Image (cartoon, rainbow, N blue to C red):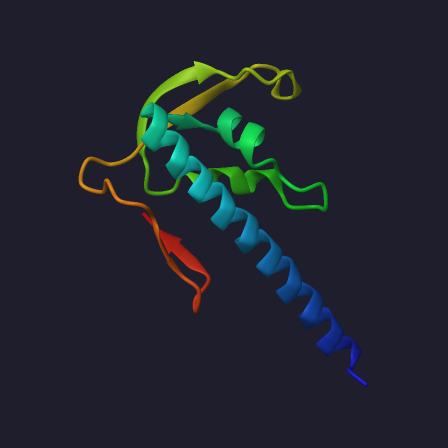
Length: 110
């Protein structure tokens, strides 16, 4: 039977995997959107790859756009965030291909 410490570590690992899986899906979604339209923002990710309701911290949204190029600011279309100003991103000029994924380390790069 696992100890309390082992059970706690299993739960922590499960939560990390859950966040990593959502982040991977969100980055692929962002890539498809930016290829189709030339730009992507957090509203797009909320629309096409919403955060699960199981406790993933919404600040993870910033990691979706890591490595992308800032283009401009715009007002959010979402009333839930009070139509605050959000960033719009595009792909860096030197990286037109799809993001690469390393399943061993759970990382993803643009």
